[in-house]
Length: 176
Image (cartoon, rainbow, N blue to C red; front, side, top):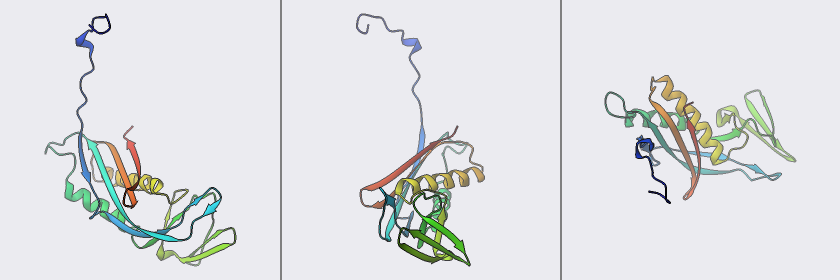
């Protein structure tokens, strides 16, 4: 009885069982420069030693694992390497004027102007180079790489990007 009513125990939802692996920092990191725009302002260029956290949920394979830790770590490390020692350029920024020509990016914000060689830039399809948007971009790349490798058992992928100790931006995506 619950508050004077009987409870039909046979209609109670069955427990949800989830398997999950987690890969954390130290081996998944990149160093990069960026600035963010917010409230009509633009930070000075600065850098971070970013740590990346990845959590993958899914069904167990025939081998009784969600994913091979070593292979998944190599996949994520390769994606992080694309950002390592680069300037993180938010190509979809509404605040920046960005031109690409002659192997360079010219970036302008009001009276400030930067010219960077393409080889030093990770041009990302995001609107701001915040930890949250970096986590979203990494999530999409990780999910695509897992799919390309044949991993069809993946349900949820969560990525965290730590730009300083205790400051982590997170993004989670579920398989539709």
